[in-house]
Amino acid sequence: MHEHFMKIAIEEAKKGFGTVSPNPLVGAVLVKDGEILGKGYHQIYGGPHAEVNAISNASISENTTLYVTLEPCSHYGKTPPCTELIIKSKIKKCVIATLDPNPLVSGRGIKQLKDAGVEVIVGVLEKEATDLNKVFFKFIKEKTPYLFLKTGITLDGKIATSNYSSQWITNSLAREKVEKYRNFFSGVLVGANTVIQDNPSLTCKTSGNRNPYRLILDKDLIIDESYKVITNNSDRKTFIITDEKNINKDIFKKLKEIFFIQFITFSENEDLKEILKKIGSYNIDSILIEGGSGVISSFFKKDLLDGGEIMIAPKILGDNSAIPFISGFSPLNIDDCINLKNIKINLYGDNIGFEFYKEEGCLPV
Image 1 (cartoon, rainbow, N blue to C red):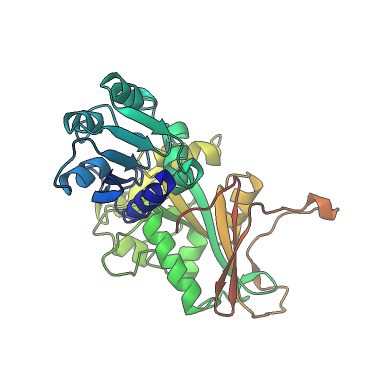
Image 2: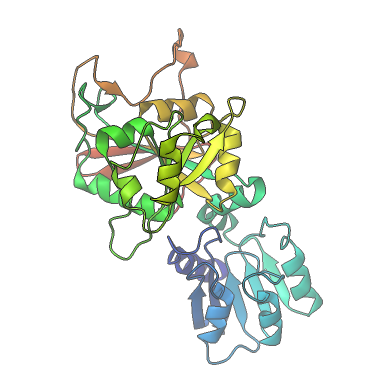
C-alpha cells in the first residue's frame, strides 16, 4: 500500500519538470483509509512546497497519512518549514521516500516530526525517488552542475560533413527528446565553433517551457554580435566562458554593455572542474553538453560526464575528413576504450539512442 501511494507521489513530482530547479522535484499525497484526499507537487522555484499543496487541496488533514518523495524541510528559506504545517495539520503518519542531502534539512525534518508525535517511515521507493533528483543530490553536495551529454551522430560516428553541414542527422522524434532535455536541464553548453558553424539559438522551442542558460566555451573570444545567442538575449541568460586575458578587448566590453552578455573568466592554471564550480555559483545546477567535437572530447578526457545520450541515425558519410563526435584518443588495446555504463536503449523511429550514466539509475526525462 505504501509503495502504491508513493508511486503516485513520484508521478506528481515529475510535473515540476523545468520550473523548480535548482530546487528538487517533490510530490506529496495525503491519504486516509486508503482514499486520496489531496495531491500536490512543487510547482515553481520559490513557490509552495509539495506538502503545502497536497494539504491545501484536501478537505481534512487530521489522522491522515502523508506520502512525500523527499524529507520535508525543517528550516525557513523562501517558504516556511513544511514540518510545522504537517504538525499543525495533525497528520498521524508521514511516509518519506528518501532523506534530503541538504545539511540544513537532512534528518532534522524527521526528528521534528517524531518529536511532535508523528509516526515516520523512511525508505519507501527510495531508489526511484533518488533517481528523480540525481541533479539536485549532486548539486547540493558538490555545488557543481550535473553534466549530461547529448549528441546526434551517423553510423560512422560523424556529427557533420567536412564543410560542417549537420542539419539534420537525427529525425524529428529524436529532436523532440532534445527539446525535453533543454527544458529539464538548467543550462546548455556548446563551443564557439558550434556557434560559428550552426548559429544555434540554444532555446527550448516547446511552447510554454523555459529557456536554459546558454553557455559558450570561447577561450579566445572569437564570436561577436553576429550570432543568435548574442542578439537574442532579452532574458540575459547567455554566458561566455573565456580566458581572463580577453577582459580588455573591445568585443568583451561591447558584448557585456550592449548585449548584456555575462562572462565567466578563467586563468591558464584553472581546469574544467574549477570552471564548473564558477558556473555552479550562478545556481546553474545542471548542464546539457551539446558539443561540438572539441567540447565533447574534453569532457570525456576529464571523465566529468554524469550521463548522456548518443543518438544514432541510419546514415553513413564514409568520409575521413567529416567531423567526428569525439577525437584525440589513441588506445592501442580494445580494453582501453571508453566503455559506457548503465545503458538504456531508446528508440525514435529508425534512430537509436544510447543513454548512459556514471552511476546506476536513469533521469526521469
